[in-house]
Amino acid sequence: MTPVEPRVLSGTSKLAGIIGWPVKQSRSPRLHGFWLARHGIDGAYVPLPVAPENLATAVRALRDLGFRGGNVTIPHKESVVSVCDRLEPPARRAGAVNTLVFEDDGTIVGTNTDGLGFVSGLAQAVPDYAPADGPAVLLGAGGGARAVAAALLDAGCPEVILYNRTKARAEALAAALGKGATVGECGSNEGLARAALVVNTTSLGMSGQPPLELPLEALPPSAVVADIVYVPRTTRLLAAAAARGHRTMGGLAMLLHQAKLGFRSWFGVEPVVDEALERFVAGDIPER
Image (cartoon, rainbow, N blue to C red; front, top):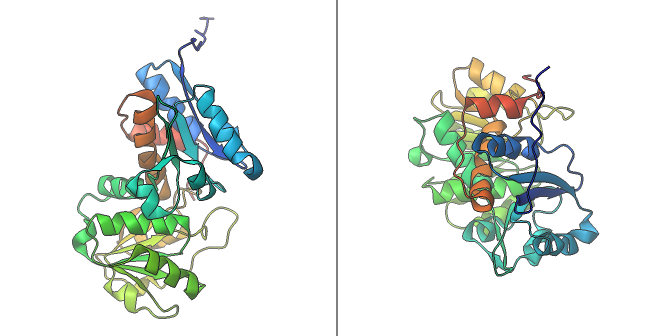
């Protein structure tokens, strides 16, 4: 048997990780581990389970221990904002941080790559779509909706129409986003009838959650349908949209593309999202 060459970290290894509570479900260690191996980088990306009451202490400790930064996931994306010394414009716009960079002088910089990851993933998955093509309908009004809506508006989308079960929450988000953000009436298909893009930013359709019910017959045939859920890879919404001939994008694309900026900041290499990466990260994710 050919001996396996162990991967050994050095005393100058570049370190990053993902902070969450829990964090065991995250695909990010698998994703960044693939890129580290591909580029032969002396470094590691590790899961970091941090309880909410320990968040500030943990972030500063990671900085002091020599970490380059890390990702932030549920439930810390909004609360970590107060731990940052500086926020990049995407984080201020989204009101949340998903990526931390620790600068050489100890400054903790927070940014948000979720929206950029969505737009970048959509450009790769549906290259003939552009945000300027027409209104986008977003289902949900949480952190994911805010990041995606802000990125679409910044990329030239003329209108983002927010639909949420709690209308007051959608109205608050629309007010925070400003020009171009409007609120749709639940039960009305008026927004869907004008949509160039529909995005599910809720957890509906995720494995273990109820499916998302949406009247796709109200959509123009040219509309693109996207979902930020990636477990399963093809949700019932995406399957139904594809059956009607709509162009679609699953949530895995957003996950992969949002990771690029952080990897470049921590490890000094511009990574590429390709089929090999997608197959590896998808791993045991069910197709349906």
